[in-house]
Amino acid sequence: MPVDSTSPEYEDASHQWQKCRDAYAGQEAVIASGQEYVAPLDGQTATEYVNYLKRGLYYNATARTVQGMVGACFRREPTIESGIVDPFMADVTLTDVSIQGLAKEAMREVLTVGRYGLLCDYSEDEQRPYLVPYLAENIINSRVERIGGRSVVTMVALAEMAHVSDPDDLYQTIPQQRIRVLKMEDGVYVVCVYVKVKGASDREDWILVEELVPTVSGSPLEYIPFVCINSNSIGMEIEKPPLLDIVDVNLHHWRISCDYNHGLHYTGLPTPVVAGFPKSNEGYRIGSGVAWWSESPDAKASYLEFKGEGLGAMQTAMEEDESKMASLGGRLLEKQKHQAEAAAAIRLRTAGDQATLAGITETLDRGLTQAVALLAAWQGATSEDIVVILNDDFFAETMSADEAVKLMQIVQAGYMTVDNLLFLYDRGELLRPNTDPTVEKEMIELQNSIQSVMQAEG
Image (cartoon, rainbow, N blue to C red; front, top):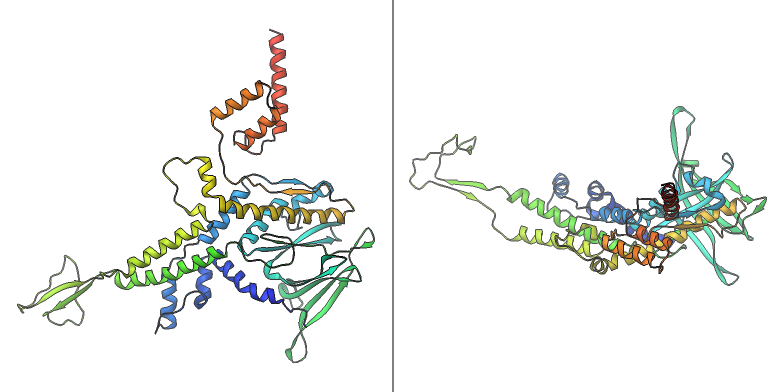
């Protein structure tokens, strides 16, 4: 099999990934895909079909749902304990992307297509390890084997696109397709890089241009330093995109919108109908500044107006789709209730959405922690103290003044510590954003000491 062969699971999932990406990208993307999502009407020419699509309005519930969930997860900064590799966290990819930025991108990708990969590599120029992100479409093949009673990843094939200098033009670069194969050979991690080149008779072949054995402190690795993050697990299995159901309803809404706006275009304006008037090569103008006359006593004029229920049914169907998208996960798309709603009621109403988001967040915690631990291992350090934990408090619930006072009274009565009080104040949105409760406690103690000194001095 050629090196660019893809797994059967990849082939099955690629269509879903493309559909999710188009739905997230918006109107231009779904129009560009044309008949993939909206079939032309009978008898339509190519020009009429393009105009038919352009009349539709794509209601991008998919992107709004993804953005809303990412915003809910990152409304509080993640907790990151990276130990020896902490200096690398501000630029963890050597492309000026911080670990926080990488975490956001990972969340966005997992929500959209359900897969995201991170390879730990080493830069000889920078003399440090770094992480290389890979989209779902670039993780084209893999192999997992049972070794020593456990499942072990023994091969991963990654598609890449590089840009090399054009030998004939100093100011141009040439795109170059590459396949990076990560594999285990006799228990040792080996990297092979293949480049696509044109051979005889313009035939394209994959040529091995680099093969190396990465080492840490002079010793080869005994594992592939690649982490594949899915929506529910860490591993090479391909899972269903978590928002695929919303995407399907979103595209159904798009099809109805094209029909609805097409109907409005042809039936929205009334058409004048006249009988018994002289023929005019220029037609008749409409408005208060002109008059129509006829010598025939039977002459008549009227408007032909659309009065059917078809467009109304389409509008109702679009509203039903919008409601379905909201119930499937996009609670941020719902119209806000005018009356006050208790916090417990909000949590019950959004329990399904939080379960999905909480599960993805927990998986990302494990995947990002493993990726940062690989950086530490490359530096010869243990990964015991490496932790990346994303926020799982997705909805702001501000503590009331009465609740705050009651908690303070519990502390004064000696039934709760100040540390726990500040923790609850932080969760209740009473402290300033990014306030460390420990620092806040130290400031309180300093303030109390100053007040005691001032009172003692009169």
